[in-house]
Image (cartoon, rainbow, N blue to C red; front, side):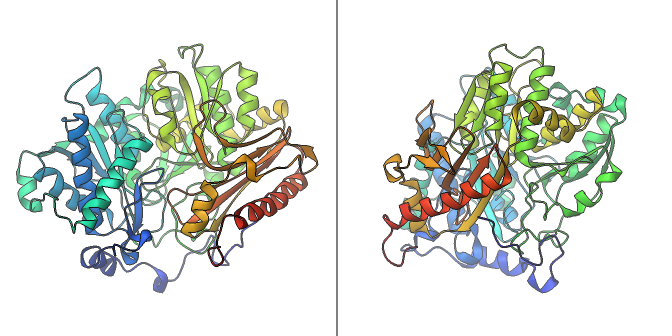
Length: 556
């Protein structure tokens, strides 16, 4: 199951392989989608529309159509407050941001843009939406973040957050996608647009100080006074992303012993070590992308990185180096539920179906309900907003949790507070999260976990989504009796978009990525690394056989 590691992984790539930013932006304006190409349509995955202008998947036409579709959606839902609009540091984010403003202003939608003309992390947008809406029932705000998250430098992304502040629900995303594609089919007839300079002079573009509002509130979610008093030595790498101007402000305001090891913003991301496949990818859970910060682990008590929109975290400790995301989630849950006395006594632990089963065991030990969901942070929004979820996390290094008083912080993933929580753990316990994780496994067992990404055609991705328990009539997996074969979340019945097979001490799952042209296979064992490999090998054979029955010749 292990993917082949490129020889360039963890190293700087040559200048000749960096994205040509000038050509990329020219392609954004010059090219457009071909109507009969499915891969060039608007597709809202688990976190908005993504693609590259070079592939005619993220061009001006797409953003014109999506922005107009959002205006149509707002009108239909009676959302008539301001729209909080932010962007990250990818090369395509700035032109898409301008295009969106032109459409929003022409439709009478007020865009709230950064007062410093800076970059805005995803959690700061969620924080702003929730702060504005408060107890309002009318004139509600929503938001857009222009970001492809951790994806390569040539990619662009555009995601919509409704008034609840989190990722859009499937029906909302689907409606926007349908309207946007209809506008593309109509050659953008029906799109209203205003010249950018005129839009910026209008009262439909206003300024908002995202950074000050977000940073000033951080002490209400993480015990930063304890971090300051303990003198915890903190290292931070924003990976050239939107948190680059936030970390110095956080360090200064809360008098932290922190250092930003790299504050360079470069749309080629030339400073990034290559990821596992030799491509630049700002994945803060990848040991290759995080190689520089890992090499400095001895200089800090804890260190952490964020992806370009700062909704993901990568935690580096002296005891473990870069922590596996599942390991850190377990340490965080164990710590938080023991150190948040004001949280509701019945608030639960939330996790996706492909996140480590260690959280299942931990929730049971804590006497807390476990809420499992399909992949996508949108499934946690209502639980976080209402306080029924104390913590929600994904194996892909995304999580959020309640304020110290038990009220909602954000309904988006927040890589900034997950990093600061690692510093709080060190301050309050004298131990880093890696050491605290060892305590969890000593009581509950050590999980051996693996996720593999593999290229997938559109046909294969659709076939994976259609898998059902009937496609896996098996009684045994890796020597253990099969307890369940599932294509939906056990409690809610929401579709996984793939399949999961569970035994007493292991499981595997397979699903299509909602944001990349890959499919993902997950496997975990609580017995041994050898047992994990056996699960993975059998999983691959079972998946291949199930897909073969659904794919036409040549579609694989």
